[in-house]
Image (cartoon, rainbow, N blue to C red):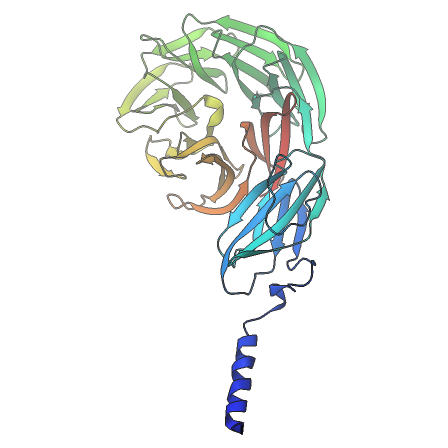
Length: 430
């Protein structure tokens, strides 16, 4: 039978065009060599993973696995007590992922799978040795001061108060304190004196320590449950459950009461701003009261606003700088005029655990739990009310104690249980 030369040419062109859809990413069906290449790049506590995009039809998703040891090659992703899914990504061009060491193991290993039609392609296992900074103890109460090299920490399991030098991971000082139960710590410096206040939400006691010596300087018991406190210059601003004096101003030196007002009810935070008269905001879920306080610590005027901040948590979860407060479930920013400027988070399932301003006030960091996924988010707030999310880091699912900026690094402290209670320290590039 004669074959038309034109048909041969046409047939060759069809075959050639179909080969343009094939790349090396398809792999060799007769080979066990990995078809994908996964690369790993550490940066502080951050583990950056990246790979080339898969260029095949039928793409479904990327699956990243993690383990404390080697992950064997298998035709499908293996998930068991030793190997877990770190991420699932359904965008073929989304080829980077960054995370902290969520396993808290000296060695962390990763493998990439790609689901294509009814089969999987995979990479080799890549591992990194990165010993996490961990100390024993349940230090879920922590506070810092930007000008001090030590941070204040309380171990609620072993009843230890600690001054910890986070730069080199050493304990500067440690004292047993069985009188503390469920404290909120407030560390600050005023007129060259470093002072640490504890406001115990369980025993209703206020205690003042020299820091980092951790020696008691003063203490006071409250007749009402304490909800939170904030030391500012020579005053301590306090919220309690009292129906007659829910908002109080104390002397930071003697802890004696200078003035008190009925205040608001329920959980609330305090924000204090400098000016001709000191402005103190008492912030609740339903309202905000703005107090004008004179140099003697007396309230000379006040006004109430009917708009509040959604679910303000304990005082240590929020932050205040010279112009703004940030806190509540949605990381809401409020100015000194008690106006709600913006909220950094949204959604019915979002809950901000910790909110912090950068030292220059141009950025804000938030640890947010959303649908059981915990992330550290960094926002540009230099042009409020506009707020732009500029970075997101995945975090282990844990309880977080503190969050702060230092030397262009975002420091995160959290607690978790492995075989016992332990406190971990993470650092992320700003």
